Image (cartoon, rainbow, N blue to C red; front, side, top):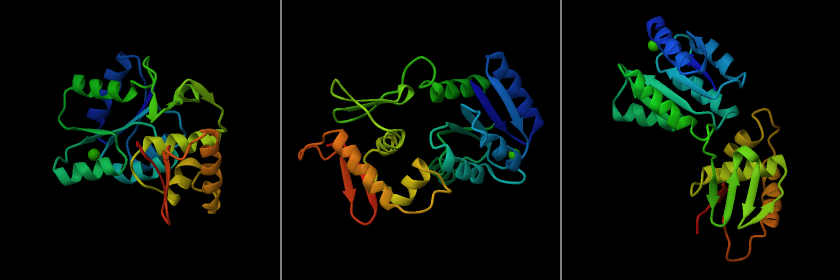
Length: 222
Ligand code: CA
């Protein structure tokens, strides 16, 4: 498990690096936002620990840019900011958790392990009605039956189910499932959705993937 720390206070980053290495994590450190983003986009990390206020680029901005390419990598903010609005903003921006400075290392460690739990030991399972998704094995089942999906179909289904019961806009789907350089023709989503519905053999009373006219799609627990 490799962790990236982006923090401009050497006292804190050294303390964290040492502590995490003692816990058998591989740890890299950047001391400014731009370098942090560059390292993060290499895709080599299982989790990011980000300071909020950074030279070059804020942790928020870094998160926003990183999330376009890596929707699922856990991000924990280290922040001295603790008003409700700012915390909500941090989480809405795509962070998974935050911890207020000053903090106890043990508490941070627990939060890191919670975020990584899906990767260590316990396999992650997502569900939507009778449909089960096991991201680690790229396996989809409806009931006991295994469903064969292409990479893109799988990614699309996983994205919708991770955002279950929320409307997913077409542009967000494209950014998350295809990539930011994809030539925008959101019609491609409809083709993949139709194919998903067919492969999942969704009957009339199994409207688990709903069309939100003019907006996008929603995975809905019925
Ligand atoms: Ca700082």
